[in-house]
Image 1 (spheres, rainbow, N blue to C red):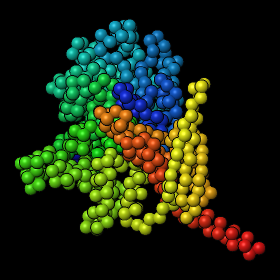
Image 2: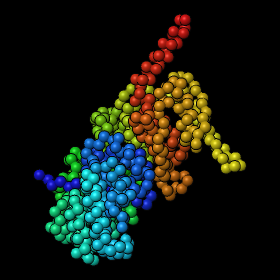
Image 3: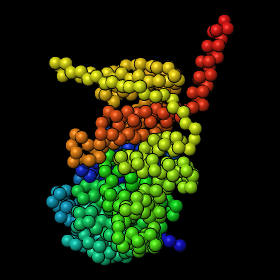
Image 4: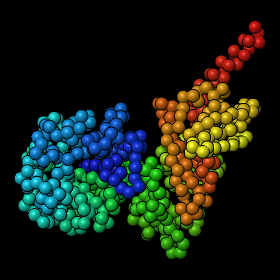
Length: 541
């Protein structure tokens, strides 16, 4: 039997402290669902006492039907001189509605004296009171021992005393934090081993990557006895980031024979890595270990010859294990395995021998070369597949669109879009105003279609992201537009790529509408039939 290691994801809190990382409440909820799918045990949603956004998240996350993950709220020990039952932050943790909380407390005497400006005994009382109070309120409590490794190296006795107090107060797990990220793997191993000999509850590890050894430190901690790992997807986090769970999981499960997630969920690591990059509007590093586009790419000479005969000659694991794919650059074989995997994941059975399959794969390779990525635009991918394998009907065709932007002397802008469409062999010309060109296009498009497809009134654009694909080209760069749409019940995402931001937005908008009409085709037929019946009835009358 493999020993279980419990995964604690803090992308939604620690990850958002990274420079350039910002997630809306909806972004967080989407990531939660993906983390739950792969089997992450704990998902830290944020700090309920710190801002309204996090409180909104904790309210909305209760509506999700999670099958595996426990949502965790983050906070600190009580304030100096305040009783635990009167501390506002502790009350917010309880009010968040979670069943698990993680609170941090100081374990480095230097931090207690210089940062908190209190006594060492008062700090121990803060840890004891806070843990005991949260346990009395029926919560599972994880104590994050902040700056533990620095504290241990400076004052071993006090650092151990601080976590012992947490254990005695009833904590369920103690996570040892390398908060400054400067500890090395051999130090982590020795210190964690010592702690495991002295503490009788579960020990965890929380590493930052300032020394670029956060993943190695996490592995060392597990080998020393820790069974709870905290980290973020893609290593997002403050300064140089946190331990990257995308690398931690396969290293532990494939190489060290621990159990992190179900075996079948390992193959989802590449897709969730890319998904989180897209939602966070970050460019995925091509050389990211395990899941990067270049992680299993081979270029020319002896390497290619050897890999084609025996892949293990230049690959440390099979890329398919974690959902990635081998790429032989000089042979132009890049991307096929990954695309086949994504098709299978989305319940499409694609036979490589089918001529349509080959055409589809070539089309997707061409699209990816242009800058398309379908990991976070599944609706666009499904449209592409439908058009390749099934009888496809165009619900509408564009004749042209025009956009007018006007600024008056009072710095007030107005934007109007004119769209001419062909729907059921009928030409339709509509105009609409909007808050910017994309919003105006969206209004004009749906205004022109509503008379034919009334159901479109139910859908709306819920999110819009733009990424510049080649910053060196400045304003001439290609852009990738991701649009999320909703009908109030379901959400779907589409993509457009172009050197013109309006065109890229239009392509994503059209996919969004086409996808919604396709998914509701049966309802559209009912409406069309009713219109026909009404027309026949009027003629007979």
